[in-house]
Length: 155
Image 1 (tube, rainbow, N blue to C red):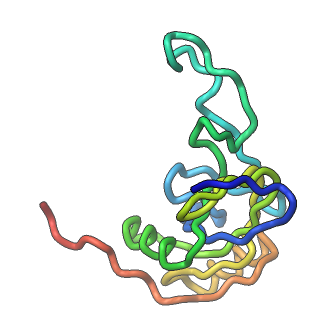
Image 2: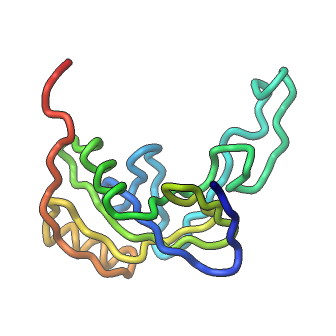
């Protein structure tokens, strides 16, 4: 079941990586701007490969007929599971994110038009990394134990 909200900001959970003292989306790698909202844009439209060779109509993100938008989970446990899947030796960041503008709600989470970090937990990070993120994003940053990799074997 999905619903659309536009009137109030919501909080969701996300996972990021740290690179060059900035937050980067753990799945697509987009850098999150410092002290400015992250504005979702659809990167699938317009495309000559969409449908039957017809370009897709440009649209604002998120859109019901697309997968665009800023993703966030409703529950911390779901974001922690994603973090365990993405462990690769670098510092991961688990955190809450404010979501606003057009927000499409689904069973597990949200896709939003705009987002900004609300508070962050460095999973195995250092005091220096925490200080750097606090200074850059002007949000609370806490140290937390590193997560263990979800799959440790091969095959």
